[in-house]
Length: 237
Length: 237
Image (tube, rainbow over all chains, first blue to last red; front, side, top):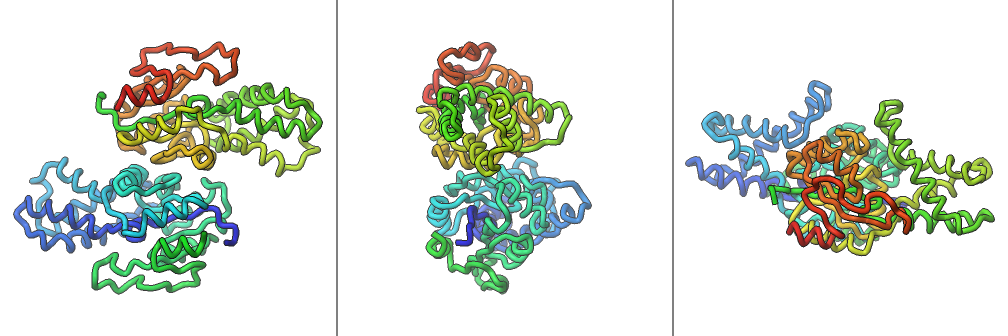
Protein backbone atom coordinates (compact mmCIF):
# COMPACT_ATOMS: atom_id res chain seq x y z
CA UNK A 1 0.00 0.00 0.00
CA UNK A 2 3.00 2.29 -0.45
CA UNK A 3 2.48 3.99 2.93
CA UNK A 4 -0.70 5.82 1.89
CA UNK A 5 -2.35 7.45 4.93
CA UNK A 6 -5.15 9.49 3.36
CA UNK A 7 -7.60 9.26 0.48
CA UNK A 8 -8.90 12.57 -0.86
CA UNK A 9 -11.75 12.77 -3.32
CA UNK A 10 -13.08 14.69 -6.21
CA UNK A 11 -16.78 15.07 -5.44
CA UNK A 12 -18.89 16.43 -8.34
CA UNK A 13 -19.29 13.45 -10.64
CA UNK A 14 -16.97 11.15 -8.71
CA UNK A 15 -19.07 10.79 -5.53
CA UNK A 16 -22.35 12.52 -6.33
CA UNK A 17 -24.64 12.88 -9.35
CA UNK A 18 -24.51 16.62 -10.02
CA UNK A 19 -26.41 16.38 -13.31
CA UNK A 20 -29.39 14.48 -11.90
CA UNK A 21 -29.53 16.58 -8.74
CA UNK A 22 -29.34 19.95 -10.47
CA UNK A 23 -31.80 18.87 -13.18
CA UNK A 24 -34.30 17.76 -10.51
CA UNK A 25 -34.38 21.21 -8.91
CA UNK A 26 -34.13 23.02 -12.26
CA UNK A 27 -37.19 21.10 -13.53
CA UNK A 28 -39.32 22.43 -10.66
CA UNK A 29 -37.95 25.93 -11.21
CA UNK A 30 -38.59 25.84 -14.98
CA UNK A 31 -42.15 24.62 -14.50
CA UNK A 32 -42.86 27.39 -11.99
CA UNK A 33 -41.91 29.84 -14.71
CA UNK A 34 -44.03 28.33 -17.47
CA UNK A 35 -41.24 26.34 -19.08
CA UNK A 36 -40.93 22.64 -19.80
CA UNK A 37 -39.25 20.31 -17.36
CA UNK A 38 -37.83 18.67 -20.47
CA UNK A 39 -35.24 21.46 -20.56
CA UNK A 40 -33.85 20.55 -17.12
CA UNK A 41 -30.96 18.33 -18.29
CA UNK A 42 -29.85 20.98 -20.77
CA UNK A 43 -30.13 23.59 -17.99
CA UNK A 44 -27.87 21.51 -15.72
CA UNK A 45 -25.37 20.97 -18.52
CA UNK A 46 -25.32 24.68 -19.40
CA UNK A 47 -24.78 25.64 -15.74
CA UNK A 48 -21.96 23.13 -15.38
CA UNK A 49 -20.37 24.33 -18.64
CA UNK A 50 -19.69 27.71 -17.00
CA UNK A 51 -17.90 26.08 -14.03
CA UNK A 52 -14.39 25.76 -15.46
CA UNK A 53 -14.33 29.19 -17.15
CA UNK A 54 -15.40 30.87 -13.89
CA UNK A 55 -12.67 29.13 -11.87
CA UNK A 56 -10.14 29.84 -14.58
CA UNK A 57 -10.34 33.57 -13.81
CA UNK A 58 -9.30 32.80 -10.24
CA UNK A 59 -6.58 30.37 -11.35
CA UNK A 60 -5.15 32.97 -13.73
CA UNK A 61 -5.17 35.62 -10.99
CA UNK A 62 -7.75 37.81 -12.74
CA UNK A 63 -9.82 37.89 -9.56
CA UNK A 64 -9.12 36.92 -5.95
CA UNK A 65 -10.27 33.54 -4.64
CA UNK A 66 -14.01 33.43 -4.04
CA UNK A 67 -16.10 30.48 -2.91
CA UNK A 68 -17.70 28.22 -5.49
CA UNK A 69 -21.13 29.24 -4.18
CA UNK A 70 -20.39 32.76 -5.46
CA UNK A 71 -19.29 31.49 -8.88
CA UNK A 72 -22.32 29.20 -9.16
CA UNK A 73 -24.62 32.14 -8.32
CA UNK A 74 -23.02 34.36 -10.96
CA UNK A 75 -23.14 31.55 -13.51
CA UNK A 76 -26.82 30.94 -12.76
CA UNK A 77 -27.71 34.42 -13.99
CA UNK A 78 -25.84 33.71 -17.22
CA UNK A 79 -27.66 30.41 -17.69
CA UNK A 80 -31.02 32.06 -17.17
CA UNK A 81 -30.16 34.56 -19.89
CA UNK A 82 -29.24 31.72 -22.27
CA UNK A 83 -32.62 30.14 -21.56
CA UNK A 84 -34.39 33.42 -22.19
CA UNK A 85 -35.42 33.96 -18.57
CA UNK A 86 -34.90 37.51 -17.32
CA UNK A 87 -33.31 37.27 -13.86
CA UNK A 88 -34.36 40.85 -13.10
CA UNK A 89 -37.98 39.68 -12.95
CA UNK A 90 -37.21 37.01 -10.36
CA UNK A 91 -36.78 37.38 -6.61
CA UNK A 92 -33.22 36.93 -5.40
CA UNK A 93 -34.22 34.44 -2.66
CA UNK A 94 -35.63 32.08 -5.31
CA UNK A 95 -32.33 32.13 -7.18
CA UNK A 96 -30.35 31.77 -3.95
CA UNK A 97 -32.44 28.69 -3.19
CA UNK A 98 -31.91 27.20 -6.67
CA UNK A 99 -28.18 27.83 -6.23
CA UNK A 100 -28.29 25.50 -3.22
CA UNK A 101 -29.22 22.61 -5.54
CA UNK A 102 -25.44 21.99 -5.59
CA UNK A 103 -25.58 21.43 -1.80
CA UNK A 104 -28.22 18.71 -2.11
CA UNK A 105 -26.73 16.34 -4.69
CA UNK A 106 -27.30 12.64 -4.12
CA UNK A 107 -24.38 10.22 -3.75
CA UNK A 108 -23.94 7.39 -6.25
CA UNK A 109 -25.22 4.09 -4.78
CA UNK A 110 -21.74 2.81 -3.81
CA UNK A 111 -20.38 6.09 -2.39
CA UNK A 112 -21.36 6.04 1.29
CA UNK A 113 -20.45 2.42 1.96
CA UNK A 114 -17.19 2.78 0.03
CA UNK A 115 -16.21 5.86 2.04
CA UNK A 116 -17.12 4.14 5.30
CA UNK A 117 -14.86 1.20 4.49
CA UNK A 118 -11.98 3.45 3.45
CA UNK A 119 -12.45 5.56 6.61
CA UNK A 120 -11.90 2.50 8.80
CA UNK A 121 -8.25 2.49 7.73
CA UNK A 122 -7.43 5.90 6.24
CA UNK A 123 -8.13 9.59 6.66
CA UNK A 124 -10.81 10.52 4.14
CA UNK A 125 -11.64 14.05 2.99
CA UNK A 126 -13.01 15.79 -0.07
CA UNK A 127 -10.48 17.59 -2.24
CA UNK A 128 -13.18 19.31 -4.24
CA UNK A 129 -13.56 22.75 -5.72
CA UNK A 130 -16.78 23.01 -3.71
CA UNK A 131 -16.63 25.31 -0.70
CA UNK A 132 -16.76 24.13 2.89
CA UNK A 133 -20.42 24.92 3.60
CA UNK A 134 -21.46 23.27 0.34
CA UNK A 135 -19.57 20.12 1.33
CA UNK A 136 -21.04 20.18 4.87
CA UNK A 137 -24.59 20.42 3.56
CA UNK A 138 -23.97 17.69 0.98
CA UNK A 139 -22.47 15.40 3.62
CA UNK A 140 -25.45 15.88 5.93
CA UNK A 141 -27.85 15.38 3.00
CA UNK A 142 -26.24 12.20 1.72
CA UNK A 143 -24.50 10.79 4.80
CA UNK A 144 -20.90 11.18 3.59
CA UNK A 145 -18.78 10.29 6.64
CA UNK A 146 -15.85 12.70 6.17
CA UNK A 147 -13.00 13.02 8.66
CA UNK A 148 -12.54 16.65 7.59
CA UNK A 149 -13.64 19.00 4.83
CA UNK A 150 -10.61 19.96 2.75
CA UNK A 151 -10.41 21.33 -0.78
CA UNK A 152 -10.34 24.62 -2.64
CA UNK A 153 -11.57 26.88 0.15
CA UNK A 154 -9.06 25.55 2.69
CA UNK A 155 -6.28 25.71 0.07
CA UNK A 156 -7.53 29.02 -1.36
CA UNK A 157 -6.83 27.59 -4.82
CA UNK A 158 -8.92 25.76 -7.40
CA UNK A 159 -7.90 22.43 -8.90
CA UNK A 160 -6.01 21.74 -11.06
CA UNK A 161 -3.71 24.47 -9.71
CA UNK A 162 -0.82 22.73 -7.92
CA UNK A 163 -1.52 24.73 -4.74
CA UNK A 164 -4.88 22.98 -4.35
CA UNK A 165 -3.07 19.65 -3.97
CA UNK A 166 0.11 20.79 -2.24
CA UNK A 167 -1.59 22.92 0.42
CA UNK A 168 -3.89 19.98 1.15
CA UNK A 169 -0.82 17.81 1.75
CA UNK A 170 0.58 20.50 4.06
CA UNK A 171 -2.64 20.63 6.08
CA UNK A 172 -2.61 16.84 6.39
CA UNK A 173 1.07 16.93 7.44
CA UNK A 174 1.72 14.21 4.86
CA UNK A 175 4.06 14.00 1.93
CA UNK A 176 2.21 13.92 -1.42
CA UNK A 177 3.00 10.24 -1.95
CA UNK A 178 1.20 9.41 1.31
CA UNK A 179 -2.05 10.75 -0.19
CA UNK A 180 -4.18 9.16 -2.89
CA UNK A 181 -6.39 11.38 -5.06
CA UNK A 182 -9.57 9.60 -6.16
CA UNK A 183 -11.42 10.96 -9.19
CA UNK A 184 -13.53 10.00 -12.19
CA UNK A 185 -11.65 12.62 -14.23
CA UNK A 186 -8.30 11.81 -15.81
CA UNK A 187 -7.26 15.48 -15.86
CA UNK A 188 -7.67 15.81 -12.08
CA UNK A 189 -5.53 12.71 -11.53
CA UNK A 190 -2.88 13.97 -13.95
CA UNK A 191 -2.56 17.22 -11.99
CA UNK A 192 -2.44 15.37 -8.67
CA UNK A 193 0.18 12.95 -9.99
CA UNK A 194 2.35 15.85 -11.15
CA UNK A 195 2.27 17.07 -7.54
CA UNK A 196 3.47 13.65 -6.34
CA UNK A 197 0.12 12.24 -5.18
CA UNK A 198 -0.92 8.63 -5.62
CA UNK A 199 -3.94 8.29 -7.89
CA UNK A 200 -7.06 6.16 -8.20
CA UNK A 201 -9.52 6.28 -11.10
CA UNK A 202 -13.14 5.34 -10.52
CA UNK A 203 -15.24 5.22 -13.69
CA UNK A 204 -18.48 7.24 -13.76
CA UNK A 205 -19.59 6.70 -17.37
CA UNK A 206 -23.02 8.30 -16.83
CA UNK A 207 -21.90 11.49 -15.06
CA UNK A 208 -22.77 13.49 -18.19
CA UNK A 209 -25.79 11.37 -19.11
CA UNK A 210 -26.17 8.44 -21.52
CA UNK A 211 -24.24 10.11 -24.37
CA UNK A 212 -21.05 10.70 -22.36
CA UNK A 213 -17.87 10.58 -24.47
CA UNK A 214 -15.11 11.58 -22.01
CA UNK A 215 -13.51 9.88 -19.01
CA UNK A 216 -15.06 6.55 -19.90
CA UNK A 217 -11.87 4.82 -18.83
CA UNK A 218 -8.47 5.35 -17.22
CA UNK A 219 -6.11 7.20 -19.54
CA UNK A 220 -3.01 7.47 -17.38
CA UNK A 221 -0.66 5.36 -15.29
CA UNK A 222 -2.82 5.55 -12.19
CA UNK A 223 -1.98 3.52 -9.10
CA UNK A 224 -5.46 2.02 -8.85
CA UNK A 225 -8.36 1.67 -11.27
CA UNK A 226 -11.76 0.54 -10.01
CA UNK A 227 -15.31 0.23 -11.27
CA UNK A 228 -16.66 1.91 -8.14
CA UNK A 229 -15.71 2.81 -4.56
CA UNK A 230 -16.56 -0.65 -3.25
CA UNK A 231 -14.02 -2.18 -5.62
CA UNK A 232 -11.44 0.47 -4.70
CA UNK A 233 -11.97 -0.25 -0.99
CA UNK A 234 -11.46 -3.95 -1.62
CA UNK A 235 -8.21 -3.22 -3.46
CA UNK A 236 -6.66 -1.02 -0.79
CA UNK A 237 -7.88 -2.39 2.55
CA UNK B 1 -33.67 28.71 19.65
CA UNK B 2 -32.98 32.11 18.09
CA UNK B 3 -32.31 30.64 14.63
CA UNK B 4 -29.01 29.00 15.61
CA UNK B 5 -27.77 26.71 12.80
CA UNK B 6 -24.33 25.67 14.03
CA UNK B 7 -22.56 24.86 17.28
CA UNK B 8 -18.80 25.35 17.31
CA UNK B 9 -16.62 24.13 20.12
CA UNK B 10 -13.54 24.89 22.06
CA UNK B 11 -11.77 21.54 22.33
CA UNK B 12 -8.81 21.48 24.76
CA UNK B 13 -10.45 21.30 28.17
CA UNK B 14 -14.02 21.70 26.92
CA UNK B 15 -14.29 18.39 25.02
CA UNK B 16 -11.11 16.51 25.87
CA UNK B 17 -8.89 16.05 28.92
CA UNK B 18 -5.61 17.57 27.75
CA UNK B 19 -3.99 17.39 31.19
CA UNK B 20 -4.63 13.69 31.74
CA UNK B 21 -3.73 12.76 28.16
CA UNK B 22 -0.48 14.69 28.04
CA UNK B 23 0.53 13.54 31.53
CA UNK B 24 -0.05 9.90 30.53
CA UNK B 25 2.41 10.13 27.66
CA UNK B 26 4.79 12.39 29.57
CA UNK B 27 4.96 9.83 32.39
CA UNK B 28 6.22 7.13 30.01
CA UNK B 29 8.69 9.58 28.49
CA UNK B 30 10.01 10.73 31.87
CA UNK B 31 10.47 7.15 33.08
CA UNK B 32 12.39 6.24 29.92
CA UNK B 33 14.81 8.99 30.81
CA UNK B 34 15.33 8.04 34.43
CA UNK B 35 12.85 10.51 35.85
CA UNK B 36 9.83 9.99 38.07
CA UNK B 37 6.37 9.59 36.56
CA UNK B 38 5.25 11.74 39.52
CA UNK B 39 6.45 14.76 37.56
CA UNK B 40 4.04 14.10 34.69
CA UNK B 41 1.20 16.41 35.83
CA UNK B 42 3.65 19.25 36.38
CA UNK B 43 5.16 18.52 32.95
CA UNK B 44 1.72 18.78 31.32
CA UNK B 45 0.94 22.00 33.18
CA UNK B 46 4.30 23.53 32.23
CA UNK B 47 3.78 22.61 28.55
CA UNK B 48 0.28 24.07 28.55
CA UNK B 49 1.54 27.23 30.30
CA UNK B 50 3.58 28.06 27.18
CA UNK B 51 0.54 27.74 24.91
CA UNK B 52 -0.91 31.24 25.21
CA UNK B 53 2.44 33.10 25.06
CA UNK B 54 3.37 31.20 21.87
CA UNK B 55 0.09 32.06 20.15
CA UNK B 56 0.33 35.64 21.36
CA UNK B 57 3.34 36.21 19.10
CA UNK B 58 1.16 35.24 16.12
CA UNK B 59 -1.78 37.31 17.35
CA UNK B 60 0.46 40.37 17.75
CA UNK B 61 1.89 39.88 14.26
CA UNK B 62 5.40 39.17 15.50
CA UNK B 63 5.48 36.01 13.39
CA UNK B 64 3.29 34.66 10.60
CA UNK B 65 0.58 32.12 11.35
CA UNK B 66 2.02 28.65 12.01
CA UNK B 67 0.14 25.51 13.01
CA UNK B 68 -0.28 24.67 16.69
CA UNK B 69 1.77 21.49 16.13
CA UNK B 70 4.75 23.73 15.39
CA UNK B 71 4.20 25.84 18.52
CA UNK B 72 3.73 22.74 20.69
CA UNK B 73 6.99 21.30 19.34
CA UNK B 74 8.93 24.50 20.07
CA UNK B 75 7.36 24.72 23.52
CA UNK B 76 8.30 21.11 24.24
CA UNK B 77 11.99 21.95 23.98
CA UNK B 78 11.50 24.78 26.47
CA UNK B 79 9.69 22.48 28.89
CA UNK B 80 12.45 19.91 28.66
CA UNK B 81 14.96 22.62 29.57
CA UNK B 82 12.86 23.63 32.59
CA UNK B 83 12.85 19.98 33.70
CA UNK B 84 16.61 19.77 33.26
CA UNK B 85 16.46 17.42 30.27
CA UNK B 86 18.84 18.35 27.46
CA UNK B 87 16.90 18.04 24.20
CA UNK B 88 20.15 17.88 22.24
CA UNK B 89 20.80 14.42 23.70
CA UNK B 90 17.43 13.10 22.52
CA UNK B 91 16.44 11.87 19.08
CA UNK B 92 14.07 14.19 17.21
CA UNK B 93 11.64 11.35 16.33
CA UNK B 94 11.06 10.66 20.04
CA UNK B 95 10.16 14.31 20.64
CA UNK B 96 8.00 14.39 17.50
CA UNK B 97 6.14 11.39 18.86
CA UNK B 98 5.68 12.96 22.31
CA UNK B 99 4.37 16.08 20.56
CA UNK B 100 1.58 13.93 19.11
CA UNK B 101 0.25 13.35 22.65
CA UNK B 102 -1.95 16.36 21.87
CA UNK B 103 -3.49 14.37 18.97
CA UNK B 104 -4.48 11.49 21.26
CA UNK B 105 -6.40 13.19 24.05
CA UNK B 106 -9.42 11.37 25.42
CA UNK B 107 -12.89 12.95 25.33
CA UNK B 108 -14.73 13.61 28.59
CA UNK B 109 -17.37 10.90 29.24
CA UNK B 110 -20.30 13.01 27.99
CA UNK B 111 -18.58 14.48 24.91
CA UNK B 112 -19.26 11.96 22.12
CA UNK B 113 -22.90 11.36 22.92
CA UNK B 114 -23.51 15.07 23.42
CA UNK B 115 -21.96 15.90 20.05
CA UNK B 116 -23.95 13.15 18.36
CA UNK B 117 -27.22 14.55 19.70
CA UNK B 118 -26.33 18.11 18.70
CA UNK B 119 -25.28 16.90 15.22
CA UNK B 120 -28.74 15.47 14.62
CA UNK B 121 -30.10 19.03 14.46
CA UNK B 122 -27.16 21.40 13.92
CA UNK B 123 -23.87 21.71 12.09
CA UNK B 124 -21.11 20.87 14.59
CA UNK B 125 -17.43 21.74 14.19
CA UNK B 126 -14.45 22.49 16.38
CA UNK B 127 -13.44 26.13 16.64
CA UNK B 128 -10.18 25.28 18.35
CA UNK B 129 -6.68 26.64 18.15
CA UNK B 130 -5.58 23.10 17.28
CA UNK B 131 -4.62 22.54 13.65
CA UNK B 132 -6.62 20.46 11.20
CA UNK B 133 -4.50 17.29 11.33
CA UNK B 134 -4.44 17.40 15.13
CA UNK B 135 -8.25 17.61 15.16
CA UNK B 136 -8.57 14.79 12.59
CA UNK B 137 -6.37 12.48 14.64
CA UNK B 138 -8.19 13.36 17.85
CA UNK B 139 -11.57 12.74 16.24
CA UNK B 140 -10.48 9.34 14.94
CA UNK B 141 -8.95 8.49 18.34
CA UNK B 142 -11.98 9.48 20.40
CA UNK B 143 -14.86 9.13 17.93
CA UNK B 144 -15.82 12.82 17.73
CA UNK B 145 -18.44 12.97 14.93
CA UNK B 146 -17.60 16.36 13.36
CA UNK B 147 -19.36 17.71 10.29
CA UNK B 148 -16.19 19.66 9.41
CA UNK B 149 -12.90 20.68 10.99
CA UNK B 150 -12.85 24.46 11.40
CA UNK B 151 -10.75 26.62 13.70
CA UNK B 152 -7.49 28.51 13.76
CA UNK B 153 -5.85 26.87 10.74
CA UNK B 154 -8.85 27.45 8.47
CA UNK B 155 -9.20 31.02 9.76
CA UNK B 156 -5.42 31.58 9.84
CA UNK B 157 -5.93 33.32 13.20
CA UNK B 158 -5.75 32.19 16.83
CA UNK B 159 -8.58 32.74 19.29
CA UNK B 160 -9.39 35.13 20.88
CA UNK B 161 -8.53 37.25 17.82
CA UNK B 162 -11.84 38.34 16.25
CA UNK B 163 -10.76 36.92 12.87
CA UNK B 164 -10.83 33.39 14.32
CA UNK B 165 -14.58 33.76 14.98
CA UNK B 166 -15.57 36.00 12.07
CA UNK B 167 -13.79 33.97 9.36
CA UNK B 168 -15.43 30.84 10.75
CA UNK B 169 -18.83 32.52 10.33
CA UNK B 170 -17.88 33.42 6.76
CA UNK B 171 -16.88 29.84 5.95
CA UNK B 172 -20.19 28.62 7.39
CA UNK B 173 -22.08 31.26 5.39
CA UNK B 174 -23.92 32.17 8.60
CA UNK B 175 -24.30 35.41 10.47
CA UNK B 176 -22.54 35.35 13.87
CA UNK B 177 -25.84 35.17 15.76
CA UNK B 178 -26.68 31.92 13.94
CA UNK B 179 -23.64 30.27 15.53
CA UNK B 180 -23.20 29.23 19.15
CA UNK B 181 -19.70 29.03 20.63
CA UNK B 182 -19.42 26.31 23.30
CA UNK B 183 -16.55 26.53 25.78
CA UNK B 184 -15.52 25.84 29.36
CA UNK B 185 -13.58 29.12 29.33
CA UNK B 186 -15.30 32.41 30.04
CA UNK B 187 -12.68 34.39 28.12
CA UNK B 188 -13.33 32.43 24.90
CA UNK B 189 -17.06 33.07 25.22
CA UNK B 190 -16.51 36.77 25.90
CA UNK B 191 -14.49 37.10 22.69
CA UNK B 192 -17.08 35.16 20.69
CA UNK B 193 -19.91 37.26 22.13
CA UNK B 194 -18.12 40.45 21.16
CA UNK B 195 -18.13 39.10 17.58
CA UNK B 196 -21.90 38.55 17.77
CA UNK B 197 -21.89 34.80 18.44
CA UNK B 198 -24.34 33.06 20.74
CA UNK B 199 -22.58 31.45 23.69
CA UNK B 200 -22.86 28.32 25.84
CA UNK B 201 -20.78 27.61 28.95
CA UNK B 202 -20.11 24.02 29.94
CA UNK B 203 -18.32 23.67 33.27
CA UNK B 204 -15.13 21.58 33.37
CA UNK B 205 -14.02 22.12 36.96
CA UNK B 206 -11.27 19.46 36.80
CA UNK B 207 -9.61 20.53 33.55
CA UNK B 208 -6.63 21.81 35.52
CA UNK B 209 -6.76 19.08 38.14
CA UNK B 210 -8.33 18.98 41.61
CA UNK B 211 -6.97 22.39 42.68
CA UNK B 212 -8.51 24.35 39.79
CA UNK B 213 -9.44 27.93 40.70
CA UNK B 214 -10.58 29.43 37.36
CA UNK B 215 -13.62 28.92 35.13
CA UNK B 216 -15.46 27.03 37.85
CA UNK B 217 -18.68 28.72 36.78
CA UNK B 218 -20.24 31.01 34.20
CA UNK B 219 -19.07 34.58 34.62
CA UNK B 220 -20.90 36.32 31.77
CA UNK B 221 -24.36 36.70 30.28
CA UNK B 222 -24.13 33.53 28.21
CA UNK B 223 -27.12 32.23 26.28
CA UNK B 224 -26.89 28.76 27.78
CA UNK B 225 -25.13 27.31 30.84
CA UNK B 226 -24.92 23.54 31.27
CA UNK B 227 -23.21 21.04 33.53
CA UNK B 228 -22.10 18.98 30.53
CA UNK B 229 -22.82 18.42 26.84
CA UNK B 230 -25.73 16.10 27.54
CA UNK B 231 -27.46 18.85 29.50
CA UNK B 232 -26.68 21.38 26.76
CA UNK B 233 -28.15 19.06 24.11
CA UNK B 234 -31.31 18.67 26.16
CA UNK B 235 -31.61 22.45 26.42
CA UNK B 236 -31.27 23.19 22.71
CA UNK B 237 -32.83 20.24 20.88
